[in-house]
Image 1 (cartoon, rainbow, N blue to C red):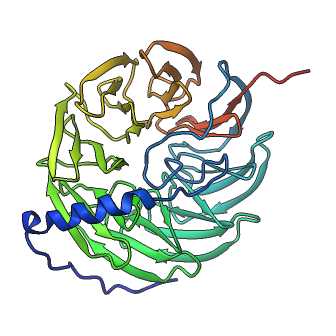
Image 2: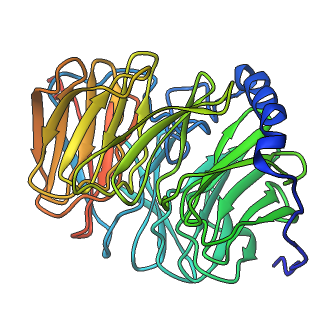
Length: 385
């Protein structure tokens, strides 16, 4: 158990004076950003550390329920799928490992508190935080704990991998960077408020959008702040980066893009009655947001112009996933939706029944998602005789 508690707030120059250096570093680092997996896996919250939420391959046009697992507790943890296994957390404080093929339970690990974070799976270890401040590295093969670390307050920030380290935020206002093999603290950055979001890694920088109303760029190597921009409102959603631009929604219903090469906000829009807890899905041609205004919508990356909007019957905390030419997203109305990426039309829906806060995980031609009425569903193609 790591007990190091020496992080202090890093002194920094004014944002405007340091912004040009930050932009140069981020733009230089971006082309070298690496994914957590080159295989058809879903190893962490948004599949890749840049948080763009794009599946490696498309799903079948029509999905069938292949199996359902009774988790014994609410599941708002987004599943990880690696090497034919599913890893997911529950409100009972359990990390469950399942067989992707048939949903058979392989093992369970008991955490210290509810697990609402998404597991992160790298090099045979599963990393997960819990709502009592415990952060755990568990052997993916048998569920035995390898090491643990304690934050001072709860962890709802999903872990993000980077070479040799793992990162996560806590309600103790820290962004932590730990050695992936040992759990030893390499550095801890102190924000001005809780770090609810999952960290986004782009090359040599880490970005968080925080409850202190700031989007920050932090050096991956040393945990020193390179730049910070005040949004004037708080954020719970993780930022998503694509081609040097950050896309994020705020708790007061704004969604925006910042052009990092010159530090100016490219565009800033408002979703009436919206609050964004979900992270956008981003490609070259589309940015797809979802919000508590019951809306899923696509915006133009360059302008923020809304191309289409689809309305569900409930709030949408589930982060959308782009797979092929479709967008997959859950809603508190109990439905999982597949929408046309082109025009937002409803292509397919699955009535799970229980509210869905988790985000889809897509791998090996299957989609896995949990519900608040204790179920984990696996959907895939109709099995051939």
